[in-house]
Image: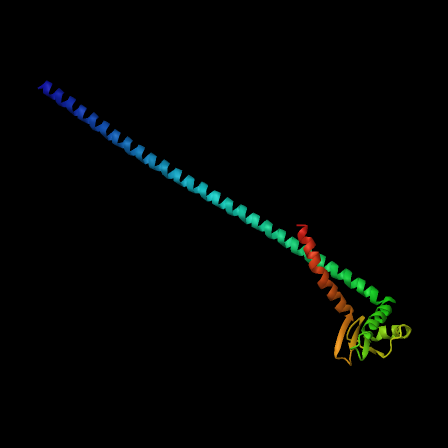
Amino acid sequence: MEIQLQELIDQIKKDGVEAAEAEAASILSDAEAQAERIIADANARAEKLIQNAKNENERTVKSGEDALRQAGRNVLISFRESVTRELNAVISEAVTATYSSDALAQLIIHTVQCWAGNPETEELSVILNSEDLSALEATVLAGLKEKMVNGVTLKASDNFDGGFRIAVNNGDVYYDYSSEAVVELLSAYLSPKVTALLKEAE
């Protein structure tokens, strides 16, 4: 009887140990599988984070490069506009200086002489602002007389600041040599050339 009881106890112990070992093996297997899933998930997340960081870095770099390119274009445009403004100021100053000196009278005389030589010119008028007409009338008329140019009328108009206009054939045609017109003409001629030079320097 004691032997049977001992065998029963041994059997229970054996069965308990085997069951415990099986349970432990199952728990260990489940733990290993869960650990692998956690590691795989962590790796996937890490790769995603790294990829996102790379993408964001590329976007930041591209955005920075685009901003630098745009800033460069803006600086160049601003510089060109500044050069054009300075050029217009220099032209305006030079024209004003020329038109406020004795050279204006000689310019008028020479221009009228050229127009008077045209056989289709029947009547010629020179239009100046009132101030210039008062200052230059005697000099211009004397110069035209010396060049043997007759039939030229000098008129006053305060519709422009400096320079002169020529009216041909009773005002059918006007030729504008006013300060504003000459500055605009010279600026239109020189600005593209300056722009081309600036582009060559890029």
